[in-house]
Image (spheres, rainbow, N blue to C red):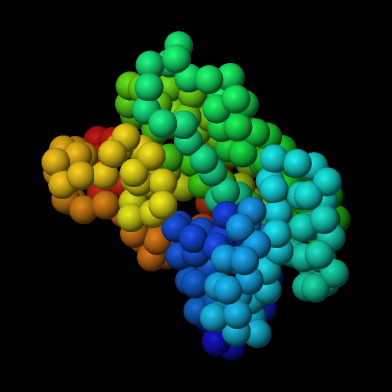
Length: 251
């Protein structure tokens, strides 16, 4: 799509093989971008890239490890020559439980994937964006950062960290022409839905949906549309925001 809203842009989307990440990848490519689908599930990333054609490529990455993130960044810069957009979408949660009963291993995993990864991708790619004096970074946070629910305390905290990091990054990188924003989705039709709810039953779905005024879960397309705006030149005056895409959930 030569005249798309992201025509000529290049992007990395972490956790891009499924869920919200795949929705972002599909929208970016539909709007003319070239996208590296980066995911810990390398086969799924490769399959999505193959489906989407020549504008998509894939990389196996563990976003919690510096060496893996550096390899992903090197691969993207080698393939694209430059990077315009970085979407930090990869994320995990722990099963709902009392905060004092979450295992140390689960806590460490949530913090490594949801927070440390943003430091690692920034360390690997911000110098390139600063040198070019251009770029857009989008962090996928959550309504949990704004309206935390019981029994997901450490996940909530990781997403609150992400919103604060977004604002701090935005202030520091603005003089270099780099914008940094976040999205706060409500739970959606993704592989993480069952984990958030504890169990995926009609009763649990009805209970959760009753808290969303618009009356439905968010979809990958909803998140892809919002991500496209924030990463496009249309949002050239927008930085440091955490945009809620939640059907009114946190009102």
